[in-house]
Length: 150
Image (cartoon, rainbow, N blue to C red; front, side, top):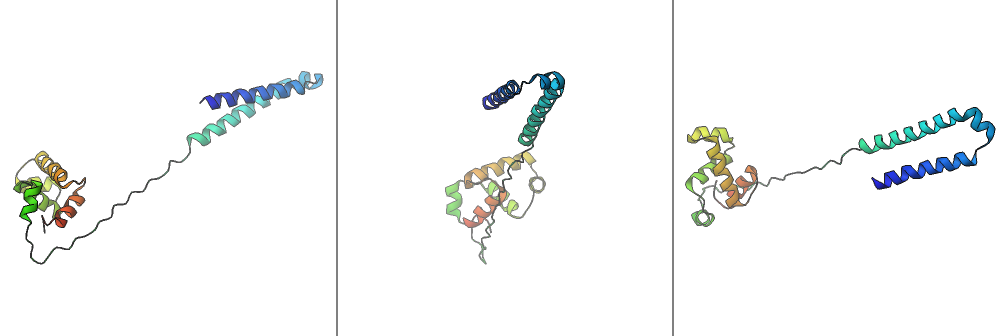
């Protein structure tokens, strides 16, 4: 902001200096309004162009891609109970994780288990904490990798 004010003042000073250098009597008397009008027009046009370019600058696009790695399930699934105990997962949280892996929404899980959607969200957030993930897809992937779900 200071730079812009200083630049604006410098341009004004240069314009005044130019007018002093070109101060021939016949130009000032006969064409003074045209000169001042032209200078004002140039200053406002330049300021408008500068502001227009500065305010309409496109914002950079950030592309985030999530890569999903599928972990193949064994032919016969055996849950790793030692891992379940180590993580401290409750049977209800395992059930929620199973239903997440089946692709059900929170509402569908709530209807199937006869609980409220808020209860499902609470269990889901606890599963996320215990598995140290942030998304449902990550939780399912981590659950399969740790042999918690088929």
